[in-house]
Amino acid sequence: MIPFNKPSITKKEKEYIMDSLDGKICGDGTYTNKVNDWFKDKMNTNVLLTTSGTSALEMASLLCKLKEGDEVIVPSYTFVSTVNAFALRGAIPVFVDVDPKTMNIDVDKIEEKITDKTKALYIVDYAGVVPDMDKVNDIAKKHNLLVVEDAAQAVGSKYKGKFAGTLADYGCYSFHETKNYVMGEGGAFIANNEKDFLKAEIIREKGTNRSQFIRGMVDKYTWHDIGSSYLPSDILSALLYAQLERFDEIMEKRMDIWNKYNDYFAQYEKDGKVIRPFIPEECEHNAHMFYLIMPTKEERDNLITFLKEKEIIAPFHYIPLHLSPVGKKYGYKEGDLPLTEEYSSRLIRLPLYADMSEEEVNKVCEEVSNFLGK
Ligand SMILES: Cc1ncc(COP(=O)(O)O)c(C=O)c1O
Image (cartoon, rainbow, N blue to C red; front, side, top):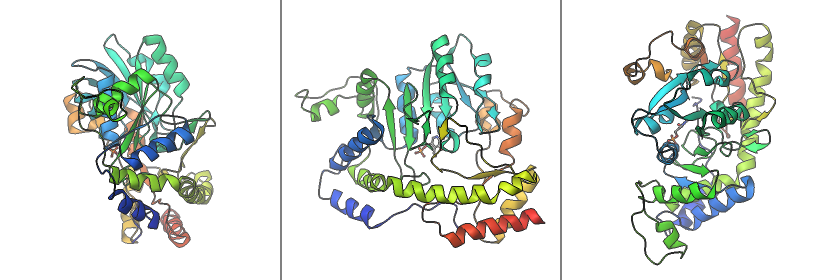
C-alpha cells in the first residue's frame, strides 16, 4: 500500500522528545525557545507556537476584533479552519472564486466583493503557492482592511524572496501530521508588528501576561484580555525542533519527488490529458502538494478508484465551503462560484512524503499512466 502521506520521523525526533521529558513539559520550555530562535535565524521572524494551525487562525480573528455581522473575504476552496476561525466570532464569509491556474483566490475578484461591512481578507497559500500578495495588500490598504495569511501549507515557501506567513498583518502555519514539518498537532502565529505580537502572546496564554512574567518583566501575572489556551507542550516543540533541524533535507526530498511527478506528466499535459500545478514566477513553492486536474470529474473519480485498486491512496479534497451544509446556511448555492466548483471536482492529489522511495514514485507514475493510456 502506498499511503497518501507519512511523516518523516528519525532517531533525532525520538531523542529530542525523550530529552524534553526531563525538562519543563508545559509550554514555552527549552525546545519551544529553540524553535523560536530557529525561526528568527532562518526567516527573521518571531513566531508563537500554537496547538494547531486552527488555533493560530483563531488568534488572528481575535486580533482582528471581528464581531457579529462583519464580513470577511475568503476563498471557498480551502480547509474549514480558515473560515471557522472568524465564523466563531460571528463574522460572515464572503467567498471569492479561484484562479484555476493555481487554485488560489482570484485576487482580481476581491475588490468587487468589498462592502462597508468588510473588515478583513483571509488569504490562503494553497499547495504552498502564495497568491499575488502585493496586490492583496494594496487592496487592503486602499479599503482599510486587515489581511490574514493562512500559510498552513506554505512553511518554507517564498513570494518575491520573502517567506510565506510573513506577508500580511498576521500569518498562520500548521505543523499537523499531514504538513511538511510536523509536531503531530501544532501550528504557529506570526504578527507583523511588535505591538500585535505582545497582544497575541496574551491571547495565547488564556488572556494573561504570563509570558511577560516568565521573562521577568512583571512580578505577577493576571487577566489582561480575552484569550484561550493555545500554547503547545514542550514535548511537541521537541518533535518540531528535530524536524526544523532537518528543514533542508525534508524540503529537498519532497522537491525531488515533486519534480519527478512534474517532469513525468509534462507530456500528458501537452497531450491535453491532465493539467499540472502552475507556479507563478514570483513564487518559490515548498513541494507541499502535487496534484493533477483531470478533464472531467468522472475521470478524476475513476482515477481515484483505479489507484485504490492498485493500493495507491490518492484523495481529492475540499468540498467547496460554499456548497457545504454550513455554506448553504449562509445562503450560497451551486453556480455561485463556477470555477471553484468545476476545478475542485477535477483535482486529484498524488502521494507525496519525504521518505517516499523511488520505486513508490515510479509505481504511482506508471499506474496513473496506465489509466491515462486507457
Ligand atoms: C489551508 C489550511 N488552513 C488551516 C489548516 C488547519 O491546520 P491544523 O490542522 O494545524 O489546525 C490546514 C490544515 O489542515 C490547512 O490546510
